[in-house]
Structures are given as structure tokens and as C-alpha cells.
Image (cartoon, rainbow, N blue to C red; front, side, top):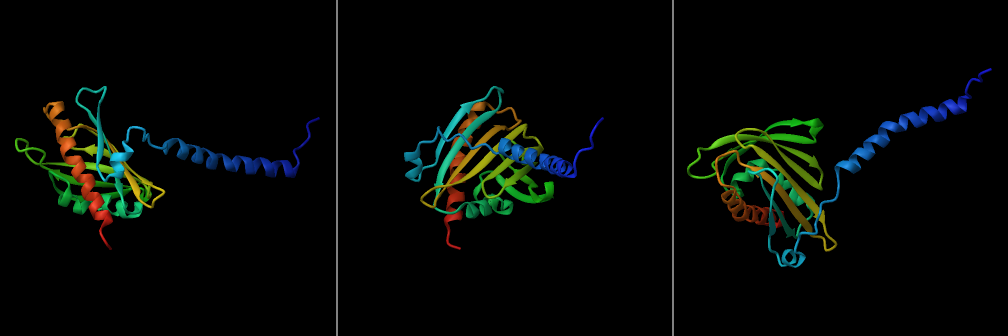
Length: 208
């Protein structure tokens, strides 16, 4: 003869079932938020207020990979406010003529923006739409949505340091989608992106 489960057993079983979505969500967060690899960074150069960068080759012929790191004497929130203020991007990002917000998505955890870019003199200005995914105040992921740019994936890491500063790390994989030699794209990124990080630092460190 089968015995009916006790009420105490049923209550425990229901609590266990209820915990499954929470545990799955927590596991997913851990899987999606790995710590970045920082072994490539020259810490002495960064401590000397330099923008340290490293370029690499991709398996895809036209994609250029670049990683940059800079020390910022400001908390992550101050840097976050600069990086997410799309409207001021033309003030310090070369070749960006305008930037405006299009839409808030994913319950406020992401936003869509449209930029007008004039990359080089022989290519007309064009619009492209990109998405920022937010993990306040630690990480911002950048992804292409639409436009001529063929591939755009980047991540900003805002990593607090023991001295109260923030290590700002940016990784980017880019295929501009135009018939431009990869060495030219790489040289342009090596010239322009350190200027961008320096400008972000200057604004984040400015008195408020």
C-alpha cells in the first residue's frame, strides 16, 4: 500500500522547487560575469599614467582586436557617468559627429544609440546604431545593432583599486565594413583610442 507524503515533506519539497529558478539565475550571473584577464597589462606603465594598449590578430580576416588600460583617480561611478553620456561623445571621440539615445530596453539594463560618424575623408558620413548593456558600475558591453559597420563588440571594465583609483579597461573587436586595409584600421585605433581613454579620465577626474 502506498503512503501519502506527510505535510512536512510536501512543504520542504515545495521550498526546494521554488529555489530552483533562483539558483539557476545566480549560476547564470556567475557564468556571464567572469573577471577579465588582466595579465597582459603593464602595471608600471599604467601606474605612470600612461594608456597601455595591445593589438592582436583575429581569426576573421577583417576584424582588428585591441585592448587598452588606464588608471583613473576617480571612483567607477564618475567614469560610468562619462561613458554613458552619449551626447558628449563628439567632444572627445574622433570622427563622431553626433550621438543620441534611441530607446531604453531590457528593463533599463540596456540602451540603444545612434551615432553619425565620418571615419576618413574618402568615406561619406554615415549613421550606425549600437547597444550598451549595463552591469552598474562594473561593466558596459558594446554591440553593433545596424549600419555599415560589419562587426563591433567591446567591453568597458571599471575595476576599483586598493588606492581608491579605478582601473579602466577597454577591449574592442572591430570590422569597419569598408574596403580599408586592416593595418590602416589598426593604426587608426592605436592613434585614436588612447586619446579617448585619456579624455574619459580627464572628465571623470574633473572637480564636480
